[in-house]
Length: 271
Image (cartoon, rainbow, N blue to C red; front, side):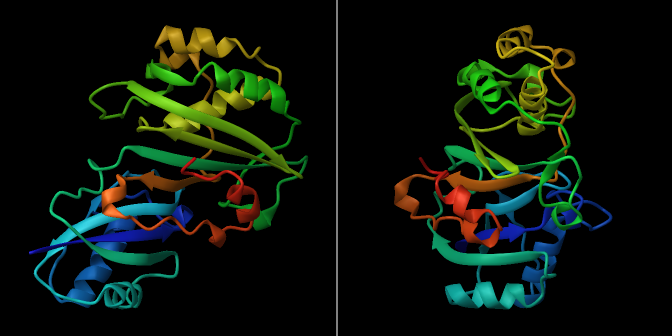
């Protein structure tokens, strides 16, 4: 039996999230159908992190076990031949049995692209979040600084979250402006369900001047979802990177597939 890891990219707007569902309209359903068609046997995948409806994947990682011996690039080309244009296998790599797409990961990085303009752009529908009011970048950076570290993030957790603990270590939040866009990077050991979108909702509320930057101190300490801002839209959220120990030599995510990759190149997801 061999363990194979795959790097996956997908347009989340085209699916009802990652996890397989009876209606079959998820990324996992599409991927496992394509793998089954190529391999001629059913294959079950384990994913690094389940993403919600509308959330995109640039650096998603899965693994599966199989008795089939195929060249790495055969897995890529063969599986892609049966995938819709909104999903693509970027790489395939044999892994030792000790590798696990979810449990071997020690960090995850999400990017959020936010378009700030009085009028929405149809060219960005599903690709970037949008807000029509100006935002104070410095206020959002100051607010983000209060969130860094290991905390109980219950105030940013959805009621559907299945995580065993709300305690996570948030290593970094970067806020970078580029023209009419503001780009956010969130890096942590792991994230709760809707955590990044709830953090975005709070940062935007501060950026709009609805709350001072230190409001986040009280929200965090309160451990109550009702204290935080509403969940922000999923459109601009991308799973950019999953970090693994060097021994597994997992290939880096290909961030050049998004229009603002030049900005994201300066926000190295691994730094």
